[in-house]
Structures are given as C-alpha cells and as structure tokens.
Amino acid sequence: MNISTRFTEFAMTGAFFWISQFVLFGFVHEDELMTYLPQWMGVLYGYEVLIPQALQGAMGAMLTAFGLIGIFVTGLVMDLLGVYFTPLERIIFNRHVSRNHDWLNGATAECSPSVHADYIQLKENFGTGFIVPPKKTMLRLSLGRQCRRIQAFLFSYIHVFSDNAMPEMLIDNVHLWRTTRAISTTLLFLGFEILVLYFHVDANPESSVAASAMAPGGGLATSVAIAYGLFLLSGALTLSAYTRMCFSLFTLACATRGKSR
Image (tube, rainbow, N blue to C red; front, side, top):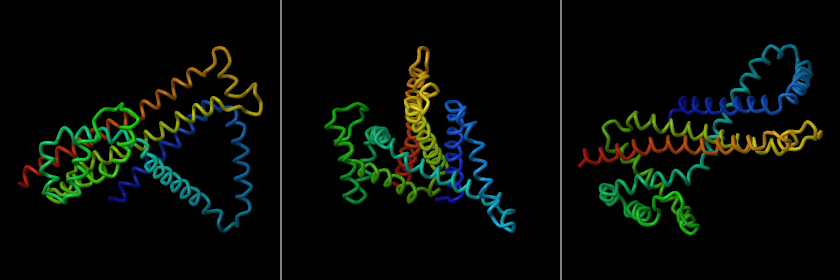
C-alpha cells in the first residue's frame, strides 16, 4: 500500500465529512450554531490563557496537527464503515464471475483445490439478482469469504503473471472505488442524520426542528425525500465505482491468463 496515496484519500474523505457536517448544521441549526459558537470559542480562549507563555506560540501548530489527525482518522473510519455496501458489491462481483465462467473455471482449477471449490460455490449458489428470497439472502451472506478469496485470487493472478505487476489502470480504479465508497458512507450518514435532526425535539418546542417540520408547509416530507435521495445516491456511486473496478480486474485477469498460457 502506498502510504502517501492512502493518506491523501483519507484526508479528502475526512475533509468531505466535516465540511458536509458544517453545511448541514449551518442550514438546520443556524440559530443554535451562532448562539453557541462564541461560547465554545470563549472556552477555548480560557484554556489558552492557562498555558505557559513559552508554549503559547506552538498552540497554532498543535491545533493544526490535531485537526489534520482528526480529519485523517475520520477518513479512515469512513473507509472502514464502507463495508456496509459489501453485500451489494458482492452481487456485482458475482455477475462478473458468471460472465467470465469460460476462463475462470480453468484458471481456478490450475490453482489449489480450495480456490476452485470457492469458485464453484459462488457460481452455483450465489446468483446474480439484486432481489432474492430471505433464504437466498442468508446463503449469500454465508458466501462472503468465498467472494473475498476469489477476488484476492484475481489480484494475485495479475500481480504474479502480468509483466507490469499491477497495472496502473487497475490501481487507479481501486483507489477510485475506495474513495467513492468512503464518500458514499458520508452521504449515507448524512441521510440518517437529517432524519434524526428533523425528529429531534429541542427544549423549546416552538423553535424545535420537529415542530417546524410537522407544521403546515413544514419540511418533513422534504427531509424524508432528501434522506432517501442521499441513500440512493450513495448506493449508486459506490456500485458504479465498484463496477468499473471489476471490469478492469476481470479484463486484466483474462488478458493475463491468455498471455501466460
């Protein structure tokens, strides 16, 4: 893993998360934000005067460092929470497995029996439809390890037998997929957050978001529509990026097999 590349990705996705939070609270809780922000700044200033004079010059650098670390950690958390989209990604992956069965059968058979057994299980039991009965859904969840092993097999196959080790096109698509999935996780979080904020009752019901949403002409229907739109957008972005990555992965693996034979 290229550390500088991953750091850049985490920084971008972490910054996107916090910018979206500021924008959301600026629109939804503008009055509360303008009321409490000076108080928070006053608290920070109170702690600053307690710091020794020799260290006050380094306060700006320390706060900047803490801010960068916080953004980086947020990006890392968004990347880890992206596993929410894994069940949908597995459907896309198995569609590619089904489409490339003609050469995958021979490629996995030349590897260890466990890899070939995983491929056969996916081919025969997973299916390609998005909507399936609950029993089929449970079966798909149980085949998660097989999906990961076949995907790892394809990456390893390209890395070992390709002249270029890992082609730049595939690397770019993997980075794009991971970054898009982290951004989509932020959009998903925003959707849930909008619903929670619109049903939250403040201490003063007359100024609460819930009261204004429930009032005639209020924003309840709008908030639900926005949240639903964010849910759909997050899924569409992730699946689109993952589909591009799968096209590159399977095409390069097929070309590598043809060249190595």
